[in-house]
Image 1 (tube, helix red, strand yellow):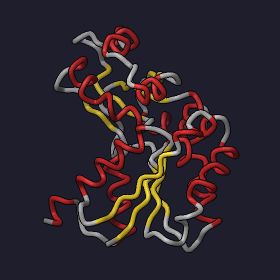
Image 2 (cartoon, rainbow, N blue to C red):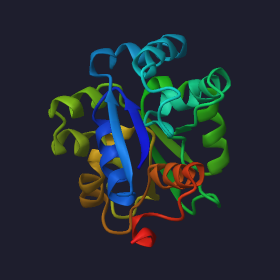
Image 3 (cartoon, helix red, strand yellow):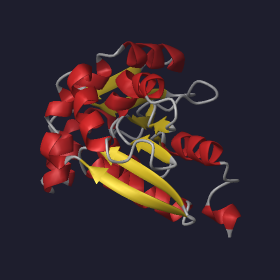
Image 4 (cartoon, rainbow, N blue to C red):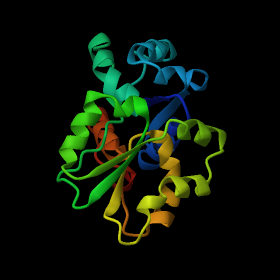
Length: 219
């Protein structure tokens, strides 16, 4: 059975791994969740690389694929790992870029470290629409601790919940925010489009492992 490591520093990795297992039951998913270093990984790309190298040392060269279920690590360190360990396959959770620009103005839920990267700047330019960025640095840890409430989410996004609002598309640039999808659909309504990058990561995973399609096609 093909072995895939999912690496992250919080529940975002767990959410990602759950979805990957549901889509590809023919692979073995190994969860490497570095809870102890969750805050340190956000400090700097250099420190994040160092921490990730230590956590992944037992797996590099011994598994079929390593997936970074972490936007910041993907944006700042994926190329580094691919150059450093050429015999190991790596896939990352990139910012989801739609094939065509959104028809409506958009909201991005992310964190400050991600929003400060050149990749994020280029991503916003690609959207070619008015973008409201919410850098919600406290939310990932609150999700990890089970402390983020629907009321807090509603209050934070209250200005954009009006039925006539032009903001009807949301990009999730933090894997912990996968947990918010049901609440976001409840608050914004059934017409809300949510982009989280998982589908792109799934396609790249299938391509790397030479698997045709997802679980639905594999059955």
